[in-house]
Image 1: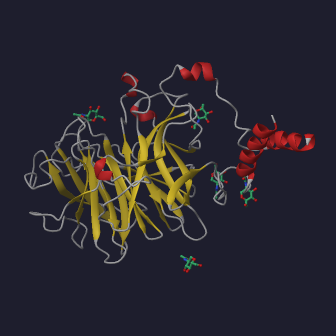
Image 2: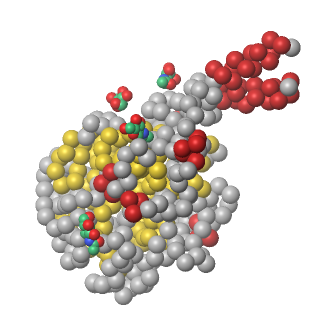
Image 3: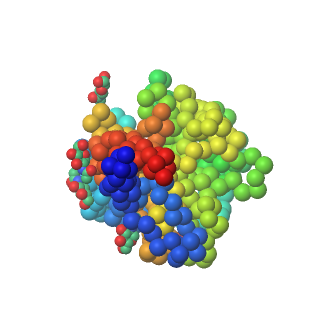
Length: 386
Ligand SMILES: *[C@@H]1O[C@H](CO)[C@@H](O)[C@H](O)[C@H]1NC(C)=O
Ligand SMILES: *[C@@H]1O[C@H](CO)[C@@H](O)[C@H](O)[C@H]1NC(C)=O
Ligand SMILES: *[C@@H]1O[C@H](CO)[C@@H](O)[C@H](O)[C@H]1NC(C)=O
Ligand SMILES: *[C@@H]1O[C@H](CO)[C@@H](O)[C@H](O)[C@H]1NC(C)=O
Ligand SMILES: *[C@@H]1O[C@H](CO)[C@@H](O)[C@H](O)[C@H]1NC(C)=O
């Protein structure tokens, strides 16, 4: 029997799970950030960014981020290096609201050879916001046309229309119904959380603007603050996935929120693009549900959020990308970094994978298939034989 025990010990030591170096627990335990190894480390995208948006076009990645006139970058690799191409807007957004020099949270889609960049004009802690859109037919330098506002909240044309009367027009993303081709704009934040409205076929305005067919995607009832924003809707294998950021995004240089109250990335799914979405436990996203897919980890990655999903195909896995703070660096807004992980799906639920190997598609995402199970089995043997 001894050789079996010995074999188990060797496997337990040799397995990649056992080989993850332990953090300096004494120091980390005092910190507010999570030391869990439940989530894989972020693969660095090697560019400072807040609310990143990445699209793949002609085998090149194009990255859009919030900032002066909406900067655009290009790379052959999600890990960079990123080359700055210019900006979406040639100057201020034509939307006459505060901070229109620096739109937030762009999302760019392509349809029939035209690129549409949806952006937010808002100010910290304000509901006086707007979602605008700009278009171009080429990503490599041609000027974009700013079409201005789709949705106003707080002030401006249409801001008296429900549900703009109770929501906040920030953090737009767009999803197409796979069957009908209808486009939907998703948006929202702490004010009544996340909503969806249909777009006109030209993608430049909301359909039935005076009485839009709006549905609510997420809500935290009975809570004073409702920290959900930054929605993204992806599709895979018959399900739409509604992703969002939950918690506090920023201002950490002024102090940290309680552990676990910082940004994390959550998801629910539905057979219909319009919902209702449910998390893995069956809880509705309208009842505060949302499975945590990625959060602070290893005492290194802090407050990941502002995410998007790049769809894979038969040869490549989906990519979850987001911004995060590296606890070894600073916590200022401008110090947030691009991070990413491949996604595998377990029983139809997305799980981020360690490392940059797109084919690492095994049970735990570490090492060759089966090692994780062997580790558990050998652990059981150790218990039994002791
Ligand atoms: C992408 O960049 C990473 C990190 O620099 C590197 O390991 C990888 O080989 C690159 N992949 C490709 C396809 O160039
Ligand atoms: C406008 O943007 C600047 C730079 O990001 C920021 O410092 C300032 O607080 C913003 N103004 C408001 C009212 O949010
Ligand atoms: C992916 O594989 C499936 C099954 O083999 C096939 O039906 C489908 O056409 C493939 N899709 C692409 C984009 O290659
Ligand atoms: C955090 O920064 C340190 C120091 O620059 C670096 O060694 C580490 O790889 C970074 N970790 C992540 C997850 O970015
Ligand atoms: C990546 O996957 C390939 C194919 O399964 C494998 O041969 C290779 O060893 C893996 N690399 C790492 C670093 O895990």
